[in-house]
Length: 375
Image 1 (cartoon, helix red, strand yellow):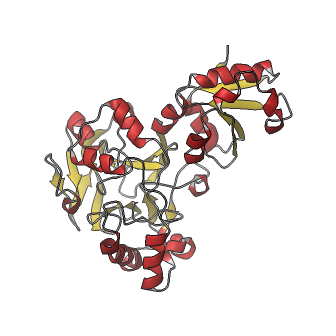
Image 2 (tube, helix red, strand yellow):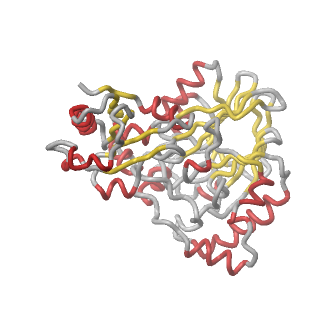
């Protein structure tokens, strides 16, 4: 019987930078599209149907030391148990099947403490390693605000309950296109106010509270201030937390910048993106810490598992912030775009309230990597 390891344990190993050897048993196309990543993670793809008669034909792709720990993963957790058993029969002593497979990996959220706030309170980041999504909790004096939440709302509900936090505000920086927002559902569950930038909300079918440039939200002793920052979407709004942290949504990432094409208006929004990155943000303090809504890969993760960097550092190191001419910038952000996110049109419509997919349909819509950035 194969040993089982949870996705939470896998996430903690990756955050700690532990070496991991993973056998991914999905088909080659699925593997090429999306896999488990980490700074010290090695993954080989050996499809399940090729291992039915044993792993002997693939021994040259596996560790020579039979004491090496190996983790097997598949789409939902069933096939990987069989693969783990085949590896054990080949003499490997420490083999684990990842419980729930890539489906569970896609949905796991790992909370990371970012830091204490000057006015009193704490800022937390929820890292969705399998999707590259980042969401936030600002807590002060027992009150809280959640920003850019994912659809797995039970994680946030459980966390705030354990920490004795009453959520007063739930905010989305923009209308998301790569994942289904948990914002409206959480606001209803927790009796909080749900905020959305009105320029992104012209087609939504539900009531919300508009958030405009310069608006202030009070959370205990802490002030969250809205900064209109269009470019990824026409309504994209950043949030300044306690004059320490800059939540940039999908406008600015650690190693890249946001793509302006997910609503089919790339030519219209390129100049907005440049204006935000090269003028609006330029006026802000260099020591403010940038906290994006996504990250692209493990190289952007700090040693504690957080994804964060000072704005001044990004202006020196992020290529997207150092493109001289407007013409070159326009070319870069219109020609260097990765494939659009899986089912992004349906995800946008779901976030507008126009579609109501069931849970399994929501999972399928979100399968795959994060693709919100310009390469």
